[in-house]
Image (tube, rainbow, N blue to C red; front, top):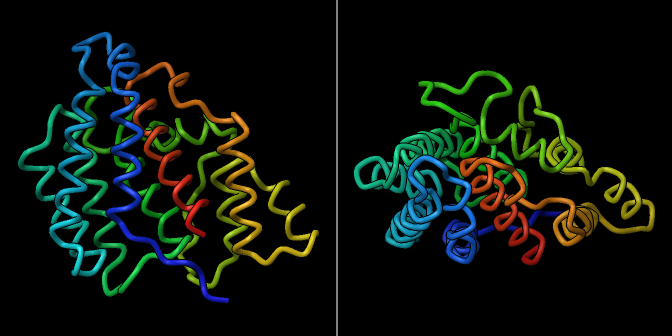
Length: 223
């Protein structure tokens, strides 16, 4: 059975909407400048505008353009890490006409894995990225590598990223196909209050968790 495909602008538009709603709470976590939420709203707006401009192009071309726009016009130091993550994702999706479930999971890893959990290292240290912090919020463990085989069972990805393995297996045993089981597992985690990004304690982790949650919620509702 073929997997659903997703529009990048829809995914990042959901992230922008969530960030706009929670910008003050994220600002409050920023004890340095008090504006991380404001910066992330502007950065996500740059990304969504760029993706909209390139909506007729391939995902790689759109993500590459968004990376360039963010690198040139991003707000705050963290914007450069997000630009790097978008660039990595663009390279990963070369020649892909569209993105499916596995690709969206890999996109999140590339995007959030490029951001150091703290400081300004050129490259995040193992276990020290915002992606690792988001996994900690969901109860998961940092993976050694994201499965790249497009035929791999998305349940393996879920078991890596989210505390939804049991829900996935239960759904499969009840007769749901893979796509339905994935959707049920995601909803179980995201709607069950198991992940509250604002409890992350740092503005980078809170913002990254909010982006991941909103994108995964879009994944679940559009399956």
